Length: 400
Length: 226
Image 1: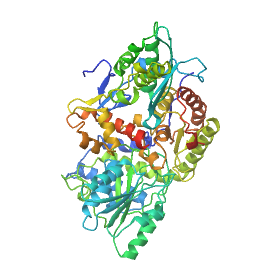
Image 2: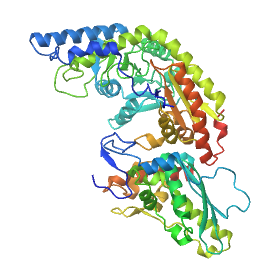
Image 3: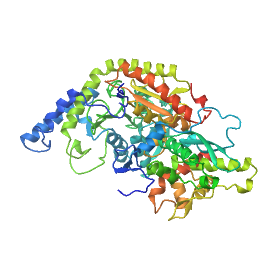
Image 4: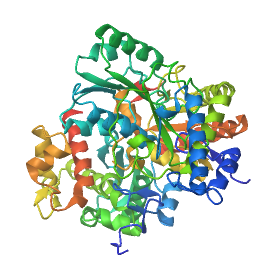
């Protein structure tokens, strides 16, 4: 029998939507101009850029001038942390982030310590969720920025962004202060949750194209009017001086289009993915003993399944699945560049061996119930084989 | 690119099976590694029976991502290893390396204790057609588990005087730092790479040893504070 080819790593990368590809095409060849040029070719590029900016603003409930196009989620996050903190350091030197943030938030935040900032890294609960109360209790008069991830990229837990944002606004009103400003990293949301910045009460939000059937290497930081940001690089006046560099018009046009579809089709897709997600978790729990679902059982991204298997190492598991035509991801140290296991799973208060034993499967547009049936039939055999080779750790208490 | 015989085929960039710390180099698992990983030899597939083995050893810990246990039957007359079975919690290269080691020590008449004791990680890696450099110290624990099992045999057969405990191993030749120095630093509370580097000067002139130092810090942290 031919091996299947089942891609369940949508949180890492998504295939480009065919509609998006068609929209992008003319901007590589016919409409190739530099939007800063004073001629017709440049003007066409400028028009495309303006129209993409309007479209992104509409999708996010923001104003066009509030959208800063970047090279993706990592740059948007860095701009939100480093760019904002450096510009606003006169107002205070304290920033708050959660322990379950993406490294694109955590590492710039830690880097700011060297610039004299005081950084509070908030603990999460056992599901990886950040509590509104803890955020509010950690704020001080010198707090200028709070950043909390919207949907966790590893364990899928959704944070109560709208509630945290409301709490911060109330605090600002009471203190008659412009600070703290609230940022969320929404790179994993892809339209399946509310992305309107006004409705979810955020001042800044990072969005990424490559995670929502758009092109890679493009994203944006939406920054509310009045929120001042220092650029990370210099050399041109683009993006109102906040992100100099010739705009990648084709990618930006594709990003705007992908975001439009993600938001338009988000509610329907959310329901479909949630049903598939729960079907997969249920099927695997039924057929494999001693497994655990990492992250929140209900308040989680519609497409995220993160499981740990007692006495099974993640990289070995991935290699066996790869050979079976199933493509997933793990929080094991062996596949990370740093040789450290997932900081997110450790942040849940779990021991390193649970992180080493984790498998992340993230579903997407092409995922079908038939794909999941294959996973449900293959995974138990692979787990059984690896368990037979492994010494017994006696760690069953961390599993169901 | 030049490579040692025990290092896997490598390329510039991130396209291989295993990618380096800085993302600039990556390695491929050889066909032999894949064969031993997908068809492991000699793993212990049932609980050991009475008298089946006369020695056992272990190395690593699950917290560090790799743990290895080994069971041996050593012929008391010839003191050659007749049977070697194992169980490993670890990545692809850890499983393949243990499988290969179990084959090497029992081939032919079986290795003598002295031969087995001198088996180095590099030998196992070479027989595997090379392993990624960054997998060197975290996943090749089979030689340590083997020496632990040999000591176990010597203890059990009342030959305690022949037991050789692990001597310290030089990690960074330019800074003259051994694993024992790192262990002492961790015991004294240096729990981060920066603290250990400050205390021992390890890796300052030789950045390539840093991944190993990190893995040792993790190991000793788990041992003393885990």
